[in-house]
Amino acid sequence: MNLVLPLMPYREPTLLDGFAGIPRCLKEHGKSNCILVTDKGIRGLGLTKGLEDLLSEKGISCTVFDDTVANPTIANVEAAREIYIAKGCDSIIAFGGGSSMDCAKALGARIACPDKSLKKMKGIMKVRKKIPLLIAVPTTAGTGSETTVSAVITDGETHYKYAINSFPLIPEYAALEPEVTVGLPKSLTATTGMDALTHSVEAYIGGATTKKTRKAAIESVRLIFANLEKAYECPEDRTARANMLKASYLAGVAFTRSYVGYVHAVAHSLGGQYGIPHGLANSVLLPVVLEMYGEKAHKKLAELARAVGFANDEVFDGMAAEVFIDKIRQMNADMNIPRTLKGIKEDDIPLMAANADKEGNPLYPVPVLWDRKELEKIYRAVME
Ligand SMILES: NC(=O)c1ccc[n+]([C@@H]2O[C@H](COP(=O)([O-])OP(=O)(O)OC[C@H]3O[C@@H](n4cnc5c(N)ncnc54)[C@H](O)[C@@H]3O)[C@@H](O)[C@H]2O)c1
Ligand SMILES: [Fe+2]
Image 1 (cartoon, protein in one colour):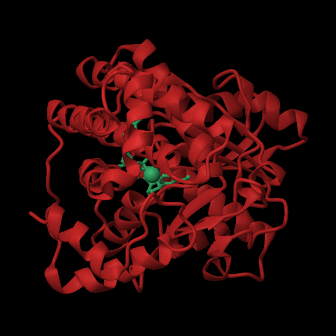
Image 2 (cartoon, rainbow, N blue to C red):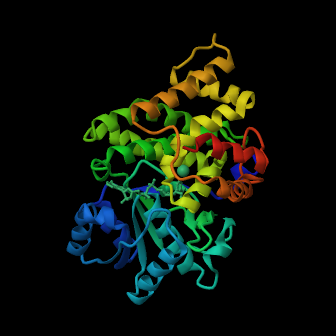
Image 3 (cartoon, helix red, strand yellow):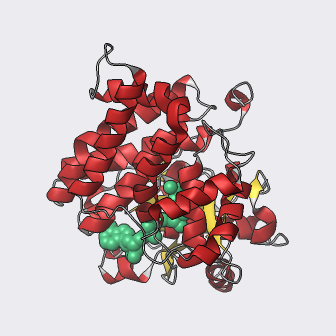
């Protein structure tokens, strides 16, 4: 993987200068009729209004699709596709958290490949055609979806949640606008921030890093420990909000190239089965899974602990790794994130563990490879 990674056609979105850059960018590409994919909560808060007004002022027609649900489903994407076609749209604005951005990315994939179902796009590099012009505006910090190859979709009938990982899904443009994250409720600030931390930590401790992804992951971990609790305590701290958007973006840069690990595999199965929010599942699972990896993860976790200043070179790896995991637990506790998850049923565990196993093996370069029986222990460890 390490040999192949540098040869892969990764790219990063061009960053636009706030909302103002969006109509300019659409015009430069000759686009005049976009669809804005978001959810009702975001639109209801008026977050899209400034952009909708600006587009209208500049003579760009904008159809809003605000039916995205958390853990977006195949049905969601198909509904957006019908509207895109009916209105003759020519470009896509993804406006929201990971759910809206992923719905928009999957919509782009379906427009590019009308004869391929989303199920057939599951996995790596199944979408090979260029998707319509896509501009991402993240409102959580977050999933990093604005820079990743992934769109995570749930099959509403089977509750199976899976990722479509294809290079054309990397948005061409992104606008990191702290103002839209200022009203993010405290609990979502906390859990989406911990999702970003999970991305950088899982990418860093996995076996497929490069110099670039290690650097991005370390910078992201530093920014998160320095800013997440500030954004949580003081939601209007725009510097902390901007730093969290940067951290989430860098975590995206790291994990889209170096993958995630079992925290994500298990979180996806819980999201698919019970709709447990992705960030919440990751926050609770992260310290538990890191602890369960044991000695195999100590060296890398110790490196992170030292990079963030939690330990110095004289502290043994095992001790430094423990300090790092404790700091995560402490941050969770400070932000009122629970230690367990409600609603997990014993009878569902074997199927969820099988799905997590299917997702993780062989794709994720995890520090320790587990079988289904081992994975089942993780669900029991976080059951309320
Ligand atoms: N594509 C990727 O690379 C990637 C990476 C990680 C996670 N994901 C996926 O992203 C999804 C989770 O995304 P998320 O955690 O960003 O949450 P989300 O998009 O599901 O949003 C959660 C809630 O927060 C609200 N919200 C979002 N921004 C807000 C704001 N600024 N102010 C007020 N409310 C706001 C939304 O209305 C929604 O109710 C999951 O499906 C997960 O699997 C994708
Ligand atoms: Fe995630």
